[in-house]
Length: 129
Image 1 (cartoon, one colour):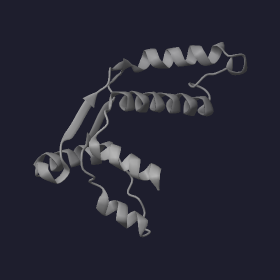
Image 2 (image 1 turned 60 degrees about the horizontal axis):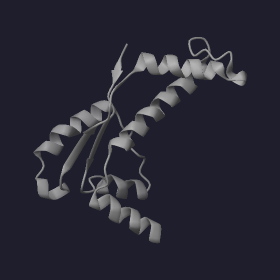
Image 3 (image 1 turned 45 degrees about the vertical axis):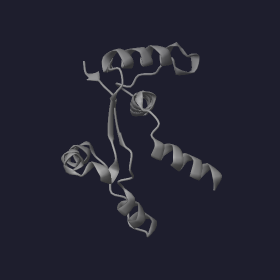
């Protein structure tokens, strides 16, 4: 079994301005990875606080991957149209299971996050354009 703890890491300032401009000018977006995020952590901690404001780290309640998967399989198999749901055999069913797990983690991350002033101003500006 694996215990999954969704973690939300966000900051007051916008760090990706340079990469965002490059992408707007046609450069390909760099693929993100866990190693890349962890590598950036040391840079974040070394930066002057005034440049990006506060760094917020929030932990959502953890959950058992095994229990989540067992519950999802039981739920799918209880449906008349998905009675043969079996992610161990069907690649399509495995994809459904992995997407559901990923969305669950994202939902928990979003639930644990709070609204920062920068995010609030950005949302208001985007809604008024």
